[in-house]
Length: 202
Image 1 (cartoon, helix red, strand yellow):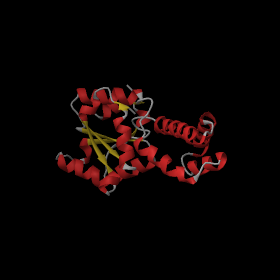
Image 2 (image 1 turned 135 degrees about the horizontal axis):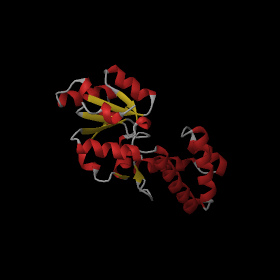
Image 3 (image 1 turned 120 degrees about the vertical axis):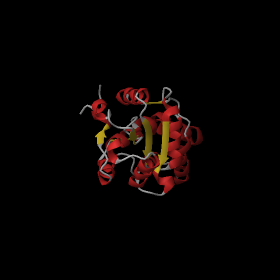
Image 4 (image 1 turned 45 degrees about the vertical axis):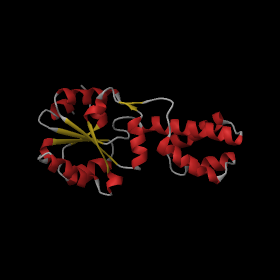
């Protein structure tokens, strides 16, 4: 689908964050690296082995129960669950998060065309803000308006409606860019045009 053609008659574009603008694994794997380093420092356990285990489990089974599995495999005290969770929210990453190349180019084009850009993201607000702060936006940060669904305690559809209302727009004036069925369902509830981020290419 030609997103550049699709967006010609739109005034705003709404993005999710994780796996839409950047690969979420780039954040999580750096969190796991920092946690492994912390455990090596605190408990003299091999950070390289811990990280390799966590990476393997994450790639095979995702984030569910990852601390518990790691703690069991390396005899890590349950008290470190707190540190694991806290790192997800406030980790200072060794490397900046990089936008997908196709999304970076697309957003730069939106700025040139004077389209408004919104990010509506679900998940822990502190964690999502931490990701945003550590992303290399290439100057795009000056053109972003961000809403945290969990902080506002509402569904994405309500935020979509607020954005439309605040800008005196109809659903046909907007485009939602997402990466999963939930994003698509939320858009369809509002009759908002929707596109999968991976389909955006010049």
